[in-house]
Length: 108
Image 1 (tube, one colour):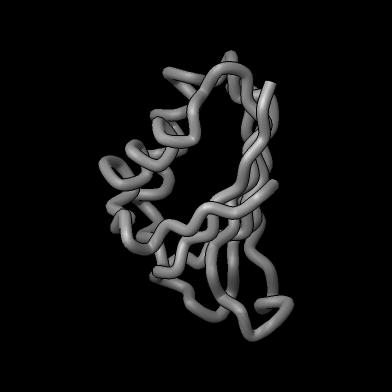
Image 2: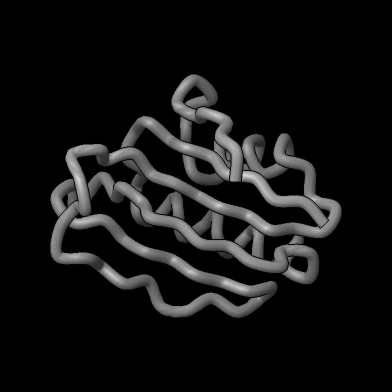
């Protein structure tokens, strides 16, 4: 088991993020032991979305009334079994249209 987190400096398109989440859950869900995120959705810049999931099961996203601070970067936290951080980063770039330069590695 390992854990890691990513910080994304740019807003993410809603449909692209949903497509990425579906992809990860379908292909790696068994090894995605826990996922939680606060996401800056491009279509609603003033209200972040909170996402929680365990393996193949994700709760419906919750839109918050506002950001808890002036920092509007997305934060994604993973607890996984055998899913390298690089795979998550690659799939974010490919399926969620996140630029590689926008992804910062952070300790979980």
